[in-house]
Every structure is written in C-alpha cells, then in structure tokens.
Image 1 (cartoon, rainbow, N blue to C red):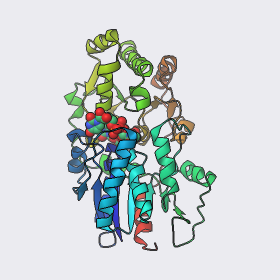
Image 2: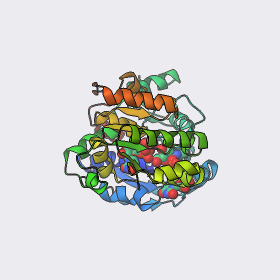
Image 3: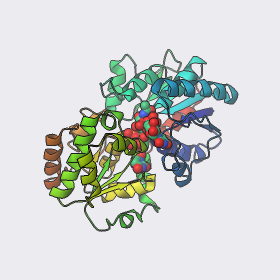
Image 4: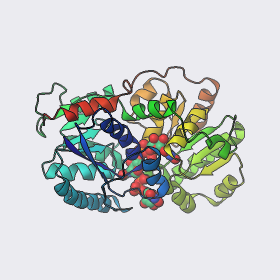
Length: 381
Ligand code: UD1
Ligand code: UDP
C-alpha cells in the first residue's frame, strides 16, 4: 500500500515519527510512505531539528508555503499538494491533528478521490472560534479512515453520525472508525526509555536539581489578545516570585513576536529584570521531554503538552476555557484556568500543595502506530 503523509507543523513531525518508525520496522514491504512537508513551519528549531533528532526520513516534497493568513495558507497548501498527489498517486493520504496543513491536505486529497486517513480524529473543544476546531470537523467529515485516540473522540464521532460498526471496504461514504490510542503516547514511551540527547537541558538553564515550572504558550487566542497575553505573563511573574520557583518558557516564534508587540511596558521590564523567568528558544523534542519530566508543574495552552504532562505524571494548568482532551480534566490531572489571574493562582497553589495522583490509562497501550499500520496495510480499500 502506498501512502502519502502530509505534515507541516511541529506537532505533526513528532506524531509522524511514531508511524514512520513502525512503517520502516515491522511494516516494511507492506506500506510504502512518501512524506510531503507543507512548509507551514520552517525555522530550523520548528522543523528541521525534529527530522534529525527523531530520525524521520527527509520529505520527498516541500511545498514551501510559509506563514500567511488562514485562507491563503490553506489555499496554497491545497493547490500545491494536489499537484504532488497527482504525481505520487498514493492509495491513501495520511494527515495528523488539526492544523491548516491537516485541513488543506485532506481537502485536496478527497477532491481528487484519494481516500484520507485522519490520525487524532474526533477531538472536539466545542469552540468554533478556534481555527483548529474548524480544521478538525471538516477533516473528519472528508476522511475515509478515522483514528480517534480516545473514547471521547469516538463518542464525538458517533454523535456526528459516524459508526464504529464498520463494513469493508471503507469508502468516503462508508468510513472506518477505529479507536487506536494516541501516537504521542507511543513516542513518550519510546523516547523516554532510551538514551536522550536532551539530558543536558536542566544544566543549560541553571535548573539542575531544582524545582521549576515549565510553560508553553502559542494559541492565537492567547498570544494575539493583549488582555490575555498580559494577564498570563503577569501571573507567571507572580508565581515565580511568590513561590520562589523558576519558570522555564520555550517561546514559540509567534509568542515571541506578539510579546514584543503587545506586552505592557512595565510588565516587559519586570520580566526582563526577573531572573526566575527563563525565556528560551523552542526546544527540541528530546529536550522538551527532559524539561517535562523534570518540572514540578506544567502550564500550557498546547494540546500535545497537556497530554505529555499526563504521560509524565505532572499536574497541568491549561490556559484555556475548554479543552478537546476532556478526560485529563475529568481525571483531575489538569485544570482549566483560562487566562484568569485568580483561577491560575488558585489552581497553582492547589496542585503545588497537593499534586494529583491518578495518571493511568486513557491513551491506549503505547502502540497506536502499530494499530494504524495494521488497518492501512490491510489493503482493503
Ligand atoms: C500552528 C497551528 C496550531 C498548532 C501549532 C503548533 C494552524 C491554524 N495552527 O499554529 O494548531 O498548535 O501550529 O505549533 O494551523 N512562525 C515563525 N517560524 C516558523 C513558524 C511560524 O516565525 O517556523 C511565526 C510566523 O510569524 C507565523 C506565526 O509564527 O505567522 C504563526 O505560525 P502558524 O503556522 O500560522 O501558526 P501557529 O501559531 O504556529
Ligand atoms: N514541543 C517541542 N519543543 C517546544 C515546545 C513543544 O518539541 O519548545 C513539542 C511538545 O513536546 C509536543 C509538541 O511539540 O510533543 C506539541 O506541539 P505544539 O505545542 O507546538 O502544538 P499543539 O500540540 O498545541 O498543536
């Protein structure tokens, strides 16, 4: 079976690493994969570093779209991927998650009758003002194979009219829904047990043997809204001073840019003068894993980092009003604190004093990639 995998943003390189590893392992000879990079993320530390570190084959095509408005970026990816898909002639196209690359790759393929496999299907935050929610919904509804990572993902799909009582062959009018677990959990197990090139990380930031908080922030809802951005950074500054705990923040390029534009002057100089606030460039995945495992607590608006906090048994404050990973909140492992100063400080105090204890199950058996490969290699398209 020949598949074309379309990736373009940081979390997709990481997710693709899990499947690619399986394809080149047990499924070599059964699945032939051609990688297409949309170019949505392009800085060395947002793209190339993951291919090198996670041993992902170089993409056969880079569509080079770069940054642009939602419509322009999506349109460019659609137009350019249609062209390369006609050249590759795959049996199926694989897309991950909920970015503009996901949406554009899925639409381009579906329109030229190439069936789409969506990994991380069925997730819903029920907030359609987030671009990711639109991307997820549309992508699911043009997909032929849907791979929800969780039970909630499956239930959301059933609620939207999908069935998990599949009949072969799968077709766009009669899609297959298979709950397989989470490929990011596969990775967390795989990379945290082996040798890690991220082990020098705590020393690099003077954090060896110390308690610290890890924070990531990049959703436009937070970064592009001056009220929210300032509230979050004021809170982080407070936490570092009140609890005498360093806060390590690997900055997404979007966040760095918006901080320069939107942070109030007094706050910008307070942050610059606070040695406990450690602003870093984006980390590599292996560094990130080490940073997560060493943290006392994680504060984030990232989908992936919320889950990794759970995988590594760290309490997590989610800087959003809702999450598509609802089971983390239900399990008591994460709290939704929005950009609300009071909620953030209260939740921080609560987890700091009494961290949650239950961190088991929810994301499969650690071989979601194997389950996906088994379906894709069955060839019953
Ligand atoms: C995108 C996804 C988001 C995902 C995130 C993962 C969409 C709509 N959003 O958000 O779902 O969580 O990736 O990280 O697809 N930039 C650089 N260098 C880069 C990439 C981006 O400087 O290599 C800057 C540019 O100023 C760009 C901005 O970051 O305009 C935003 O990039 P974009 O890819 O549009 O969205 P993300 O916020 O990264
Ligand atoms: N990540 C990373 N370096 C960083 C920040 C995040 O390698 O500096 C990894 C993180 O460990 C997770 C993934 O990127 O595996 C999450 O991606 P991101 O937060 O960009 O997007 P989201 O998951 O919200 O779509």
